[in-house]
Length: 334
Length: 276
Image (tube, rainbow over the protein chains, first blue to last red):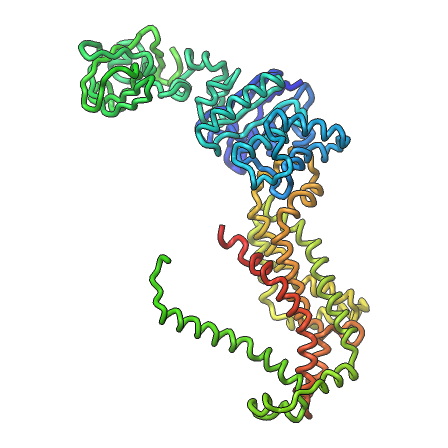
């Protein structure tokens, strides 16, 4: 079915090498998330798989057949774009029907699939509207509907939720996850939002400057980041990375402690510092602590929402050394 | 209103705008007036012209002396033919330049536009000779080709501007959905660009309709459009103002009417992309 394999794939735009030789295996039915800061090549990688960009060298195999030279439509993949990319001059029905029209699917089969997709995506009442008359969330659903009816080997999502407001984003996130459960089709999802990556993925691929920094399940990356970059990128709020004496005490060039792995007390502890900002989320509070003598960066600490702390308070912090991450000079995990 | 505009200022601007508009429109108005006068009255002082008797004589004479409808029909064939042919060539060209630009695309566009800066008379002799050798002189097909080539840079430029406004992701979506290049242009790009294509079409029909240099120089009788029809009433001596005016009125009326009905589309098309 939807097994995708990249072998030594590279991509250059003129002189600029965007993707250095890269190998990746995506198994059938997996929900894979490409995550990384902007400009890390995650969208380019997705477009290479889609066939919207040609690889400079290397091989892309889809389902055991060499797809490197195949046109996008022949790869059996469906894509959902960040801008939705709906056809503005066609009704929702025609938008969803378009890939089937191109594939010359018989009319009654087209109708059956459109109705099924519309029902699943709550679009039945909107089939005769134009995309311009729909809300952002509805447009995104039409884009997904257009992808579903093709019954693809794999779905490709290019930052599909970044144009939606926060509440809708959470809702659509769940919908996409449910869709994955129901269809059990391979999905590749590109995002710069590590929360989306953590919550949705079976497997996360962390990218930086075209390089794969680490591949693994969300919890694997959380517990065992291979290097400093992954450690800092996965997890919210970000992991505290400390250098200098503190690190040397633990026999490393850098140590990392997650904000949730630091115990806070108002009376005693290993480190002392002054609260600069307290972000109260209700259930939790994130403290940004200065004057801790451990480096120039403020420390981030997660505490219970009930703890009464405010700007200017002095607090004591004790890291959980068993959950500390140690990295060498090159940023690699020790 | 963001800015305070006094009534006095408003009045001055309004009057000035009307004066300029009337000054620009006056020659056309005067042609129409003269066309309803006798040759004798047409050359009198303006006030006397206005007060003199109105008559259809000039129209009758013009109708008698030449075949208006043959010229009209030629004008239609040349303007519509050259515009349609131009669009068929320009749509794929503009697609390529807008969506798969190369390093030199901008240069090619500039070069195309620069051909419009060349005085046409500079290439009259070679084109005339080519037409003579190919037997295209005074033929509609020959003129359609020449008018197409003349207006092609403008058609490509206009379409290029409109196409650039269309997000590339939509075309990529079509490609993912299995559309061939042909499907992509026919089912997605063209329908989305309809407003732009329509105003390009209208503007080029007008340009081709009014084109006088090539239509006068490359035709004699058979393929001559309305421009030649007008020119035939101008003469170095004798009285011809009224007849010339009648011929001009008849020649510009169709395009004026078309322009009147499509002005909304034209303005929308010409300002398209200027404001987002």
